[in-house]
Image (cartoon, rainbow, N blue to C red; front, side, top):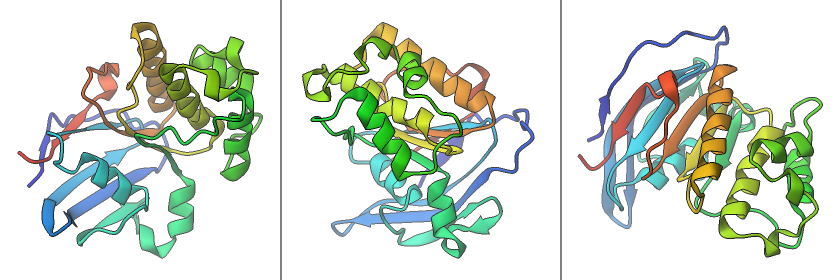
Length: 221
Protein backbone atom coordinates (compact mmCIF):
# COMPACT_ATOMS: atom_id res chain seq x y z
CA UNK A 1 0.00 0.00 0.00
CA UNK A 2 1.38 3.42 -0.93
CA UNK A 3 1.34 6.35 1.48
CA UNK A 4 0.89 9.95 0.34
CA UNK A 5 2.73 12.47 2.50
CA UNK A 6 3.53 16.16 2.82
CA UNK A 7 0.64 17.40 0.73
CA UNK A 8 0.15 21.14 0.64
CA UNK A 9 -1.64 23.54 -1.65
CA UNK A 10 0.28 25.26 -4.43
CA UNK A 11 -0.64 28.14 -6.68
CA UNK A 12 -2.50 26.92 -9.73
CA UNK A 13 -0.66 28.52 -12.61
CA UNK A 14 -3.71 29.03 -14.78
CA UNK A 15 -3.76 25.79 -16.76
CA UNK A 16 -6.15 22.86 -16.58
CA UNK A 17 -3.43 20.19 -16.60
CA UNK A 18 -4.21 17.67 -13.90
CA UNK A 19 -3.23 14.05 -13.31
CA UNK A 20 -5.42 11.83 -11.14
CA UNK A 21 -4.41 8.28 -10.16
CA UNK A 22 -6.81 6.03 -8.28
CA UNK A 23 -6.28 2.58 -6.72
CA UNK A 24 -3.43 1.62 -9.06
CA UNK A 25 -2.03 -1.91 -8.65
CA UNK A 26 0.87 -3.68 -10.35
CA UNK A 27 2.14 -7.28 -10.34
CA UNK A 28 5.43 -8.49 -11.83
CA UNK A 29 6.42 -12.15 -12.08
CA UNK A 30 3.52 -13.16 -9.83
CA UNK A 31 4.66 -10.73 -7.10
CA UNK A 32 2.53 -7.74 -6.25
CA UNK A 33 4.72 -4.65 -6.29
CA UNK A 34 2.08 -2.22 -5.07
CA UNK A 35 -1.64 -1.69 -4.75
CA UNK A 36 -3.91 1.18 -3.81
CA UNK A 37 -1.64 3.88 -5.23
CA UNK A 38 -3.52 7.18 -5.27
CA UNK A 39 -2.41 10.75 -5.87
CA UNK A 40 -3.25 13.85 -7.86
CA UNK A 41 -1.10 16.56 -9.42
CA UNK A 42 -2.06 19.94 -10.81
CA UNK A 43 -0.17 22.57 -12.75
CA UNK A 44 3.06 23.54 -10.99
CA UNK A 45 3.08 20.54 -8.64
CA UNK A 46 5.69 17.80 -8.23
CA UNK A 47 5.64 14.29 -6.83
CA UNK A 48 8.61 12.29 -5.58
CA UNK A 49 8.24 8.50 -5.59
CA UNK A 50 10.23 6.85 -2.81
CA UNK A 51 10.86 3.27 -1.77
CA UNK A 52 13.53 0.58 -1.56
CA UNK A 53 14.89 -1.21 -4.61
CA UNK A 54 12.28 -3.57 -6.00
CA UNK A 55 9.32 -1.68 -4.55
CA UNK A 56 8.00 -0.74 -7.98
CA UNK A 57 9.13 2.85 -8.52
CA UNK A 58 10.21 2.30 -12.13
CA UNK A 59 7.17 0.10 -12.79
CA UNK A 60 4.88 2.91 -11.61
CA UNK A 61 6.54 5.38 -13.97
CA UNK A 62 6.21 2.92 -16.85
CA UNK A 63 2.50 2.51 -16.15
CA UNK A 64 2.04 6.27 -16.12
CA UNK A 65 3.78 6.75 -19.47
CA UNK A 66 1.91 3.93 -21.21
CA UNK A 67 4.68 1.32 -21.32
CA UNK A 68 2.57 -1.10 -19.31
CA UNK A 69 -0.97 -1.65 -18.07
CA UNK A 70 -2.00 -1.75 -14.39
CA UNK A 71 -3.68 -4.76 -12.83
CA UNK A 72 -6.29 -2.44 -11.35
CA UNK A 73 -7.10 1.23 -10.97
CA UNK A 74 -7.39 4.16 -13.33
CA UNK A 75 -5.40 7.12 -14.59
CA UNK A 76 -7.11 10.37 -15.56
CA UNK A 77 -5.57 13.30 -17.43
CA UNK A 78 -7.37 16.63 -17.49
CA UNK A 79 -10.54 15.03 -16.18
CA UNK A 80 -10.71 12.16 -18.69
CA UNK A 81 -9.55 8.57 -18.48
CA UNK A 82 -6.37 8.23 -20.51
CA UNK A 83 -7.83 5.32 -22.49
CA UNK A 84 -10.41 7.72 -23.94
CA UNK A 85 -7.63 9.46 -25.89
CA UNK A 86 -4.33 7.74 -25.16
CA UNK A 87 -2.55 9.42 -28.07
CA UNK A 88 -3.30 12.89 -26.70
CA UNK A 89 -2.15 11.86 -23.23
CA UNK A 90 1.11 10.38 -24.48
CA UNK A 91 1.78 13.54 -26.48
CA UNK A 92 1.71 15.47 -23.20
CA UNK A 93 4.40 13.24 -21.59
CA UNK A 94 8.14 13.71 -21.51
CA UNK A 95 9.82 10.53 -20.20
CA UNK A 96 13.45 9.82 -19.32
CA UNK A 97 14.05 6.38 -17.85
CA UNK A 98 17.16 4.67 -16.47
CA UNK A 99 18.44 4.25 -20.02
CA UNK A 100 19.27 7.54 -21.73
CA UNK A 101 17.72 6.54 -25.04
CA UNK A 102 20.12 8.63 -27.11
CA UNK A 103 21.88 7.63 -30.32
CA UNK A 104 25.59 7.34 -29.59
CA UNK A 105 26.60 7.80 -33.24
CA UNK A 106 24.82 11.15 -33.41
CA UNK A 107 26.02 14.44 -31.97
CA UNK A 108 24.30 16.09 -29.02
CA UNK A 109 22.71 18.58 -31.44
CA UNK A 110 21.51 15.78 -33.75
CA UNK A 111 19.99 13.83 -30.87
CA UNK A 112 17.91 16.83 -29.84
CA UNK A 113 16.75 17.50 -33.39
CA UNK A 114 15.83 13.83 -33.74
CA UNK A 115 13.80 13.95 -30.51
CA UNK A 116 12.06 17.13 -31.65
CA UNK A 117 11.05 15.53 -34.95
CA UNK A 118 9.59 12.46 -33.24
CA UNK A 119 7.24 14.22 -30.83
CA UNK A 120 5.25 17.43 -30.45
CA UNK A 121 7.99 20.04 -30.43
CA UNK A 122 7.92 23.44 -28.82
CA UNK A 123 7.52 26.38 -31.20
CA UNK A 124 10.88 28.00 -31.96
CA UNK A 125 12.68 25.48 -29.75
CA UNK A 126 16.46 25.71 -30.08
CA UNK A 127 18.97 22.92 -29.58
CA UNK A 128 21.55 25.51 -28.60
CA UNK A 129 19.31 26.88 -25.84
CA UNK A 130 18.42 23.38 -24.62
CA UNK A 131 22.06 22.31 -24.44
CA UNK A 132 23.02 25.58 -22.76
CA UNK A 133 20.41 24.91 -20.07
CA UNK A 134 22.19 21.68 -19.14
CA UNK A 135 25.70 23.10 -19.52
CA UNK A 136 26.58 21.41 -22.83
CA UNK A 137 26.38 24.21 -25.41
CA UNK A 138 30.09 23.76 -26.12
CA UNK A 139 29.54 20.04 -26.83
CA UNK A 140 26.75 20.49 -29.39
CA UNK A 141 28.73 18.97 -32.29
CA UNK A 142 30.38 16.21 -30.27
CA UNK A 143 29.45 12.58 -30.95
CA UNK A 144 27.61 11.22 -27.94
CA UNK A 145 29.72 8.06 -27.88
CA UNK A 146 32.67 10.21 -26.81
CA UNK A 147 30.78 11.90 -23.96
CA UNK A 148 31.02 10.88 -20.32
CA UNK A 149 28.14 9.10 -18.57
CA UNK A 150 27.08 12.37 -16.92
CA UNK A 151 27.20 14.29 -20.20
CA UNK A 152 25.08 11.66 -21.94
CA UNK A 153 22.56 11.92 -19.12
CA UNK A 154 22.38 15.68 -19.64
CA UNK A 155 21.77 15.23 -23.38
CA UNK A 156 18.91 12.86 -22.54
CA UNK A 157 17.38 15.39 -20.17
CA UNK A 158 17.89 18.28 -22.59
CA UNK A 159 15.52 16.55 -25.02
CA UNK A 160 12.69 17.46 -22.64
CA UNK A 161 13.26 21.10 -23.48
CA UNK A 162 12.58 20.38 -27.15
CA UNK A 163 9.19 18.78 -26.45
CA UNK A 164 5.88 20.49 -25.79
CA UNK A 165 5.00 18.14 -22.91
CA UNK A 166 3.26 19.19 -19.70
CA UNK A 167 4.01 16.08 -17.63
CA UNK A 168 7.63 15.03 -17.07
CA UNK A 169 8.28 11.50 -15.76
CA UNK A 170 11.90 11.07 -14.71
CA UNK A 171 13.58 7.95 -13.33
CA UNK A 172 16.68 8.89 -11.31
CA UNK A 173 17.44 12.01 -13.41
CA UNK A 174 20.53 12.92 -11.35
CA UNK A 175 22.34 9.63 -12.02
CA UNK A 176 26.02 10.15 -12.92
CA UNK A 177 25.79 13.94 -12.50
CA UNK A 178 28.34 15.95 -10.55
CA UNK A 179 27.32 18.77 -8.23
CA UNK A 180 27.33 21.51 -10.86
CA UNK A 181 25.42 19.44 -13.41
CA UNK A 182 22.85 18.40 -10.80
CA UNK A 183 22.34 22.08 -9.92
CA UNK A 184 21.64 22.90 -13.57
CA UNK A 185 19.13 20.06 -13.92
CA UNK A 186 17.31 21.10 -10.73
CA UNK A 187 17.03 24.63 -12.13
CA UNK A 188 15.58 23.17 -15.34
CA UNK A 189 12.99 21.22 -13.35
CA UNK A 190 12.02 24.28 -11.32
CA UNK A 191 11.58 26.29 -14.53
CA UNK A 192 9.27 23.60 -15.91
CA UNK A 193 7.12 23.80 -12.78
CA UNK A 194 7.19 27.60 -12.81
CA UNK A 195 5.52 27.59 -16.21
CA UNK A 196 2.73 25.24 -15.10
CA UNK A 197 4.33 21.90 -15.84
CA UNK A 198 3.90 18.77 -13.74
CA UNK A 199 6.75 16.55 -12.55
CA UNK A 200 6.99 13.00 -11.21
CA UNK A 201 10.46 11.86 -10.24
CA UNK A 202 12.24 8.96 -8.58
CA UNK A 203 15.60 9.75 -7.02
CA UNK A 204 17.91 8.49 -4.31
CA UNK A 205 19.63 11.90 -4.18
CA UNK A 206 18.30 15.02 -2.52
CA UNK A 207 16.48 17.16 -5.06
CA UNK A 208 15.64 20.73 -4.07
CA UNK A 209 12.69 22.07 -6.03
CA UNK A 210 11.98 24.85 -3.58
CA UNK A 211 8.29 25.27 -2.81
CA UNK A 212 7.36 22.95 -5.67
CA UNK A 213 8.26 19.65 -3.98
CA UNK A 214 4.79 19.33 -2.48
CA UNK A 215 4.06 15.63 -2.42
CA UNK A 216 5.82 12.33 -1.75
CA UNK A 217 4.54 8.81 -2.15
CA UNK A 218 6.25 5.82 -0.52
CA UNK A 219 6.08 2.37 -2.09
CA UNK A 220 6.80 -0.76 -0.10
CA UNK A 221 5.99 1.02 3.18
